[in-house]
Length: 394
Image 1 (cartoon, rainbow, N blue to C red):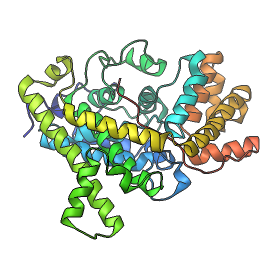
Image 2 (cartoon, rainbow, N blue to C red):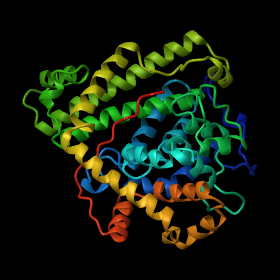
Image 3 (cartoon, rainbow, N blue to C red):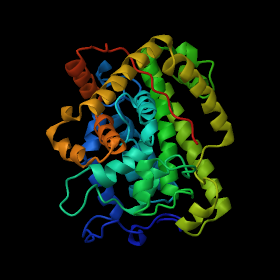
């Protein structure tokens, strides 16, 4: 049932370390299972999506976000005749490299790491799945297939300019062809990310009281959705009204993505996954009309949610946690846990030590970073919402 341009697991480019083929799982099903069972995936439960994880059980975390992205990716991939297992695996892994406190933590770590090669969460995800997960006897990392690794590395499309050191290091060993677009399944996973965060950030922002349903009435997509619910279900209870409207917003995005991508694929008529990579532009995308409407919604969310004054104050507060922990570990690497001391001992210079400290701090959950900051520095950080907006596509 797969289209000619879908990725056939039997024709995978393989793994860095050859393994015996599973008797009952495809290569990409095996990738998915290894990602789900990884330590880094479990830690997403306590990592920021938009709010610090202990703000409330209702709000999305990186884990629930990743599950929602995977659900959208499977739906869209199936509708387009693509490999659902590969799309799901890439979706589940796409945020493994996020540090505590989401993009706020990423910005802080990038500044701290500028003298040592910088920090990029997509590159860190590659480092996690190829090196830092250490459970198997025959190799470091998860030994994922080439296609899954490609999708993680190229989440924002071709990687251009100087490569982050974490990505350059691995790419020199196992070339991911970073200058091309990824396969269609990886493109689906990237846009499934957009669908998921646009949908759930509206839910979470309403729940947090940062804006109201009346505010959304003036926006494209959301305004018509609430109007339709009011027409069909006059007097509906507020929470049911909210859910019914936002599920329609979700549907508009998914249906547009499927219809637009199907048409683009039919026009381009690629005959193989390699044709998709060589096309020179994404073949999975929203229509221009929906793209423009979503841009208006994102502007609203940045102003009213991600950059609300009260939230910006908390951004400064949790940024200090990273800015104070990182130099403390650099000055006193003996504070790192015992299992990290072998890495410290192998670090031959300051850059190597900084990268060990980075791996440790970036792997922290929100909860653990706050606890360690309080334990080592004797300072609380409060628990107000933490801002975290989506990154614009490169």
